[in-house]
Image (cartoon, rainbow, N blue to C red; front, side):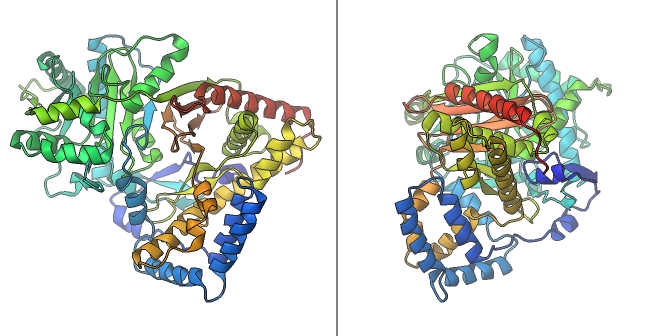
Length: 614
């Protein structure tokens, strides 16, 4: 049975339990509840509460008047609410289609840094080309092993607090790709086609290769056979190739235009199509700049997030591909994924499986059959495309710090009967407040996978309770522990509300979208400056736990903000903190240090005080 503590971890990219249910994917999906539309009055009340710590009293007063007007009987809000409820009755999920369009496909900043997360694995124990190839070969076999479970629908159904979760995202990550458009992008999933792909793409020295991964009888090649094929690829790739892949790092409108001119040529069109249709991409990277041991993980995170710039490995990618595994010659390994089809947890589950697989000894004897030569993909580079490639050379503006907080992990908050996630989030609030003497709008993603086709909603970690705690903490207040307990509880309660479909952000977005689609005048609460401030997340955060000792990383979502991703292990916590170098007021290293100090200070206060009865 689950303890109260485990229930409190609700959502948070949970360490979910899994039970194998064979071949029942569709039946399972049909049994899931659909996403509810929260009551209008409840969302309006919670919206005002969420604004309290982040806007001035005078502005809040004005917003309250707008909200009262919006939700009054017979008002604009009621009409929009009714339309939204009607939409919910007539669709599998009233939010998901809108969300993918707005959050991803219509978002025009580059996917690199601004949207696609990177994932850094522990450094593997090889330091040369041969070790790189051996590991990469096992990695391919491990992904195909996981793919078998997807194809056979024997993937373990995940549960959270006894409730089954939507498994749809697992069916979206392989054989899929984003396709640039002139105004908005699209995603294509070839796994669902009548002839599902049988190849992966391998990139080496900026050159792309098609590698068939199945025999004619449908069985996958063995790791030894993949070794042979990867060696062939490495020995046949040239070094003076135009890095076509760098085009995928562009602003989406620019890439949309380059894409049209790129695929006018038939050879290019076929090459691009082969990449898009492939099961996943494997990037065999060249060397990366050598830093100290302290900075190693931060450099590795940069490689996973954007490849380190055009002089290093940014051209050795196809960033539109949903899943790219990255294996460096020096043991640096990880992944990058395009965010439109899925959130972190399904990606992490796949990666956990693959890492475990690579650690097992190879059992299968390889048949001594000749294998077809992997096929090199050719590109015709016109002067126009050459110019696009030159312009796409990636600007280096991201500061990324990966730290391992080694003093404690989940164990300390759990010993004090506190949710580890809530404890870490409150420490982040304290760290930010100490640096800036104010609270800011904070985003933490909450999973909606309890519902069919559920994606995410927002946990707003800056609350009145967290504000009271951070303001009192350094003022020798006697109530520090009480205020900490209240702040942690408030966070836990918002989390539980969010994972059960009762948070405010997606509901407000839904009401706004109804107005847009019906071509109604935009209600005042959405043009109000407070709404813009509420959506300006200077802290964009996510907890992504895993079995493997890894960390996910992403960029900030506003120019003067931070991206913070963390993986709480039992006795340590992995953090990745990012900011933009071009912003004078933010500094990733300073925030990372402030988080370390906040966590230690919070533990000290807990240990100096008799434990409260919860």
